[in-house]
Image 1 (cartoon, rainbow, N blue to C red):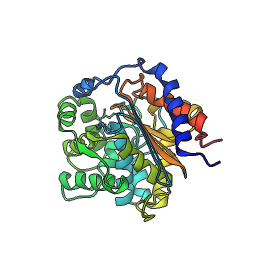
Image 2 (cartoon, rainbow, N blue to C red):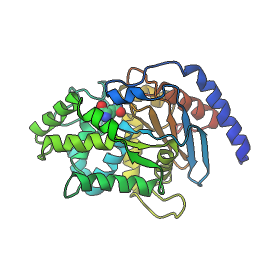
Image 3 (tube, protein in one colour):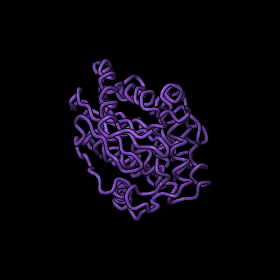
Image 4 (tube, helix red, strand yellow):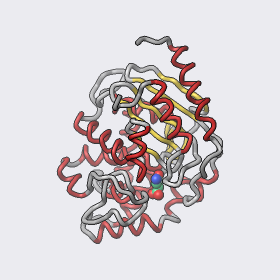
Length: 309
Ligand code: GLN
């Protein structure tokens, strides 16, 4: 059904209003010390449709730390640079009930690419002469997917995490001990933490999501940016594993393939409709934005975005 822009905006504003009851719930991440310095009450939403319409609300220009949303970038890079078989011989595809930085879901390999162990693995599969070139290639992907969006490297976040990340260091060394990769474990860890420290605003990430929703085609030019099988696998993994150990419940209640990060962002992809990014830094116990997951649930129901309905 065709709706006027102002009517859509009004509907979205009503959804935002409903989500406000959750705005005091949860805690900002503090295990990466620099992340606790954010404005706890910050809020932003961007919806970018596959036909190129953009709906922005709140502090939509604000750059925040993408953290685990970047696990989408590293999975796409690993799948571009290697065969599907190579990637999924080193990382699994199954959800896990353990927290995102657990060592338990590493048996022969990490359970899936959207927990830390899996993303450290996919990071090790990005091609490049050195870590600078590999990082630059990730930046180029974001730039291309977001059509020159607004993003940057958040050095303070990087320094804060790299100096405190004993758990991820343990994961990197454990993976290396299992011959999942043979590079220097500290180098792989460094690149992983750098990629987590990329900052972006909600519109940039929603544009990225819109390309995935658009079967890998650029929204404006219709050029194919990401092969369709990679798009399909990425969205499928977002649906089954994107919200850590609550992925099953979230998929059932919200019905939008999504990926969250402890920076407070959640990126959702509704195939053939839109990319949606919410930012609100207070997190639940699993590390998902409380306002973010609830707003996505409300938007899904009120705007008919549930992929199962
Ligand atoms: N950089 C963070 C970490 O490795 C990412 C975690 C997340 O966003 N869930 O702990």
